[in-house]
Image (tube, rainbow, N blue to C red; front, side):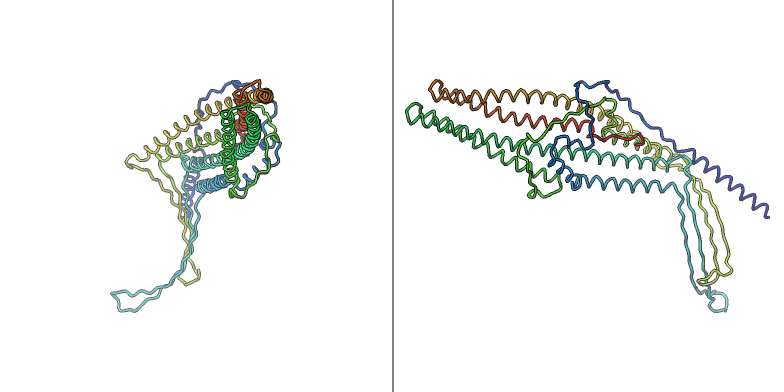
Length: 469
């Protein structure tokens, strides 16, 4: 009898060992590698050699801008929301990973009762019992379904982390652009006030000539209209400046009424340049590309899990315990040990499992196309940003010369008008040319600054994916 028990136990152990060996060999996930062509060089060349740093905003040379971005990184609600999503993804990944381990439970019971048989004259019979049991349940992952689910959850966790990096990059560039726009509006306000002063000065000249009969009432009216038009320009610029500061405060996670921006001029900023590197390295430097790639790997894992769900499920359950016919005591207990292996195969489910496989495969194909589209869009963004940066620099330099000539032309026109050599039309044209030149120079300076942040954003903002990731 003892020999038979040993034989059965050995045979069961061999079965368990074989199942566990199959489980260790299963779970392979075939990673999809989209066919994406990358150019050898950028369409727009760049002579810059500096590498893009993680704290790229410090290259503008503004301590105030650096402080504002530090506040945004600490308090911005969108970034905090993204961080909580990462936390939730970590919990989900841990839950999925916990399925790889056995479920161990312990139970204890004790009780007292009375029985009275209905066919005997005897009275009530009191019964007492106490028991303790230990149970183990484990789904043997022969086909790799549980491992695939865990791998998919980890890939989704990585995607959440990359999404947070994308939010961080969007936030930092948004703060920088809002700061630049605030200063540009203040420059345009200053220019408009200076132009108003010029218009009022010319109006005084026209008024003096009118008193001496050298100018007509029409000249007076036209120059007065120029003064009123310049005053009217100030109002929308003041509103835009106030609204831009409020928008900047929202990015910082602060109430709009509390923020004060000290700087008043764009001249306090330098415009840094950075090397774009090679197009082949862009995939490892853009968090949005890394996120789509992680989602694609999660889709591969979901396909593997859906396919494995078509195969039989093998589970092991074991239990051990003792019981005693005593209350709150285990004297003279009876012991029990059991081990069960179960095999479950779905025979009919209305094609639900196969449809789930088809859905997972369709999602994977969709993500492949999404990845290709994102890569090509990223390449375009870099080329566009590099092109705009070089064009904006050339336009700003040309506009500086245009403004110099416009200012000189206005001075000569004023002198000739005083002397009666030119009429008011020439002077008015000179004024409008200078007003337009000053305002366009401020806007081109803003475009050059925001174009630089576009370059940084398109290149990934100094983020890079490690080989382990």
